[in-house]
Image (cartoon, rainbow, N blue to C red; front, side, top):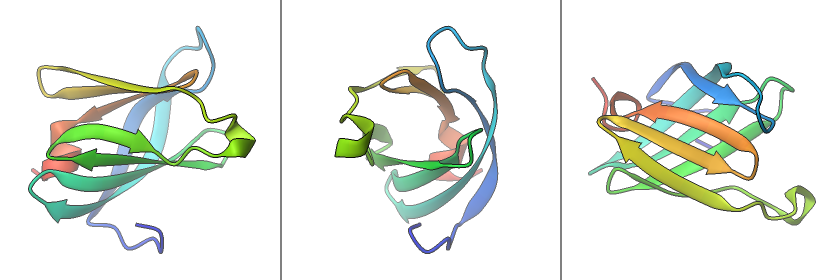
Length: 100
């Protein structure tokens, strides 16, 4: 994923600030099988955020000291992964992670 070699690309709902409405962000996903994948989302400001999945569950994101190491959380609703990285919000369907 780090070199832009993706298995699929598309758009997912995202928001970048508290209370901001969801918009569409471009993404690319590199799948490793068994629900392991890296989703790279291009945010509205042009920067990217990588979200890492292990066994189909959002596990972490590429935070840094410059970000202030924002808190990461995730949850599932049916086949939708709701991911938060600080004030950022992402909705990633299982089809992105597993294909289909």
